[in-house]
Length: 124
Image (tube, rainbow, N blue to C red; front, side):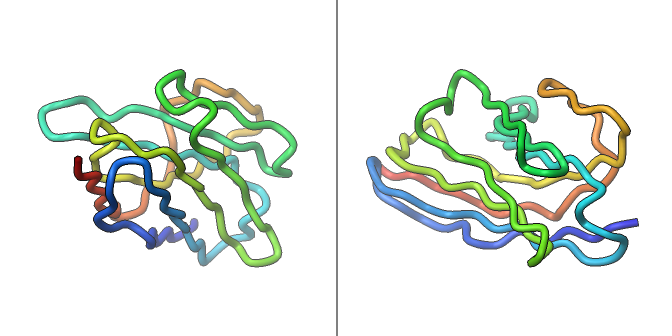
């Protein structure tokens, strides 16, 4: 089992940047594929970025491609989401998630473990 804690959210102006972190504790972090999701008010939760166990594979939703970068540091048991050129429509609660699945899937939405979320608000 793994416990996930997100940090780094906050209020930022449009065009600004934020870096979210997700610290993992518990079972060995490097066995998990990781994902970042977000959920805006009144909308479904969406997968926006994913990264494989080793960090060698990444995937992004079209809505964030070219602006967001997912990365991980297995030595620090942490996954990151660097967000640039933020837009008001990026406002949401951001969640990190982990899956112990054997196979890497860039579009997987079924994750096993979830953090509590961190709020990101982008003002105009």
